[in-house]
Image 1 (cartoon, rainbow, N blue to C red):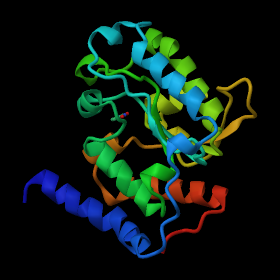
Image 2 (tube, rainbow, N blue to C red):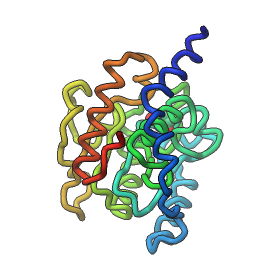
Image 3 (cartoon, helix red, strand yellow):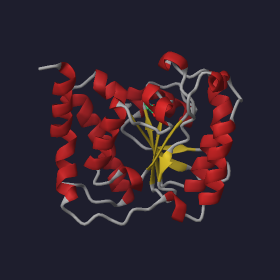
Length: 232
Ligand code: URA
């Protein structure tokens, strides 16, 4: 069987069972961004990001990718930077890594519109190269403002770039993941609990029961921290 198709089936097997069970339960009402009292300031931020020319990525991007989801989310996922699919559509995590992230969110008994999904960078680095320090520095105030508006109870840092940036650390993701850290990124807020875990793209490249199991362990800790039930 083609490797991608096989991965997809395994992904369904590992993460989607929970989603299917969850679909039979009543779904909480959607929480559209527009209903939040923070929507105007968030919308202004989205417009500012769309006009941003603070770094060279503005000259190669097709769309800015500010992030999306509930402005009242308890959980905020932060990835690295948009890829080609995200740059084409202006939405975060919609490519293959995004499909896996959807499965992970579903496995937690949640849907995409109940969490917020953002990235460290709001524009795609050409060829998906690593973010440069000056790009991160220029872009960071946008993420700080997003966190201030949403005030999530837990931030889940997806991958080494997000985890190291948000924790101001050089440690390997394998060392950071699996335990809560305090994120001190927003001077106006109390420290926010941050759980680093593997990036879904890393999971796709290293698709073993072990790596998936570690991500699931990390998610279970987040659910426990929030007092959310563990899907059976
Ligand atoms: N990888 C990321 O880190 N972010 C996205 O939005 C998509 C892929």
